[in-house]
Length: 88
Image (spheres, rainbow, N blue to C red):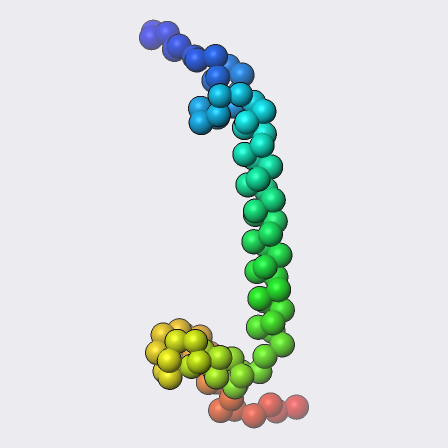
């Protein structure tokens, strides 16, 4: 059976990219902070999207991508509520 050789960094339990565990912890903290910021930004965009009507969303897509260009599936989903009135 072959004997495995562990490096000191592998025994210490941190990444090979960082020479010390402190460097690893700093990088991890930056990653987690960036991840939290991205999640907050995504939540804001989702709230803004929820507040728009289907017609407003289509207008925004046309403004951003061009009239009828791109976002084919989303445009199809948005056309259904516009063409059929609410039945309550």
